[in-house]
Length: 273
Image (tube, rainbow, N blue to C red):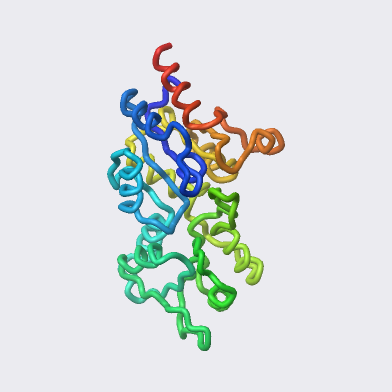
């Protein structure tokens, strides 16, 4: 690990589970600063904006800036902005997702199509499905209708579940699966393991594949995406995937550690060698 100068960090399952911090949280970030290791948090969670994470870290005693946060929601909005360019004002977008995701898309100039259970809109160009605790059959059914009629189908991230303090709960990928199964259309997924999040994170860090590593708890997103991006991958066992999953699957991390406390020890040891 001696060559690692930049870390791309997942959050859910790596830094916390629901409302519970992973032990060693503050010491981990203190060590990164002491060792002069840069970091960016790249999360598939599209329900929060960067400023909310800055506030959350502050409450936990760690000071960061918005430049340290990359969310799949903002990456999705940026992807659409780049795709539609000057035509954003004429582009109608239907979203099943959090108010944060809706606002991110709206702030970039797109028309937001409201939910109407009695009558479908005349024109919808894009359907975005993200994580939403208040998603219903009707909201997802309307999204399916629009995709059937030709709207582009976008997923903020593919996570089928997420770790909480009470266990694994359905995530954005589970909601997208309903629409995909109903329409036969596979969504364009922006979050990890897709390249968009890794490209943004690397640009923020000013890093190279040789000196950057991805730290995550999911083989299918964090580790698979990091491997595809050509960077080192470090899997923690404090979230979703287990050693048994590694042994049984084709996706292999470069390193496996129990949690961020164990990772802190390995990084400190590497510097002293």
